[in-house]
Image (cartoon, rainbow, N blue to C red; front, side, top):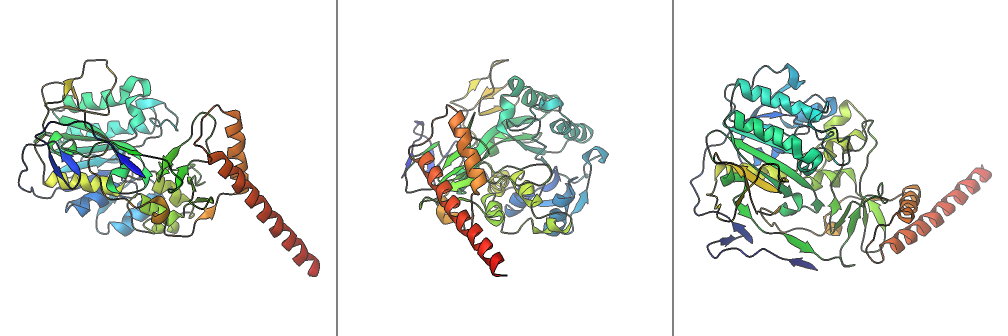
Length: 423
């Protein structure tokens, strides 16, 4: 059962396709943009923008496995490696995109902040913008950057935008908004020297959605956690992760309707990000298959970028009547903007649209692997050490899975011993 709730809105809001539109009018469609993509990964932002009709002239990515994917999927597009060696963006660039590294800004990462070796590379984007301002800039990263060190990373980026003459808006967006059963929250920052970024990034709002836990839907969780927190999602998987730097995958688990606990197939993980199945298969030319999990976990969800791309071509007109000034030193809200007259907090939700979603158990297309007994036992041991509260029946299901896996493992071991004795 799904329950939805939406904040009260003034009467002038129009409803379209189940979503509120914070706008007073719609403008005519604008021309497609020429894109230069940095920290491109496997091209999630660019693939989404292409769906909206935009085109890419330059991609920058240093990882060999990701670069192999980009060469296969964006044939004919110039591909360069180290962003520090790029002197300037192509003269025809109208939109610069950068899903810059999150390792130093992530709650699950090193939390070194904007001064870290990886996330600090966003300064290279600001260097390029200082040499040649492009009309539009789109950045993406983890929402924990709003909290880490009192949001210093975000303050640095937005301060540089303001110094360079960019109006900006940012917003946390949940991938579930686009019909994918993955609870993935990411902050998108949009800047412009020519137009109002609010008319693109903040104009649509479908309102928050509350989903009730029942045994008629699957539950996604991270079996690698269980002491201080539990990555958890109802009728969805929690945020897909990149896994380890040596290619050890870290897929989530899912408690299915029949009580089994499984880990999704890699091809379904690609689909959970909005890519076609086997989008990352070209990476196997230069690395192990397991490295593909890292590429998928680090990617930007394609439908989120596609929605932004469509709004870039057909912006609305943002209604700021519910917004309030953002005092200096106050915590960063989940959405905000500066259109040239100071910083303001926006009340929009993380759901710009509300696309029809498949249930998680219906979405998974490929055979899933049972969660190993070792992984399940380790997770269960951590839950006993924690003071976390778990949904009713969840730990009983984990115990039942361990018993089933133990019985199955015993039968397999006896069969191997009998086969060996027969030889």
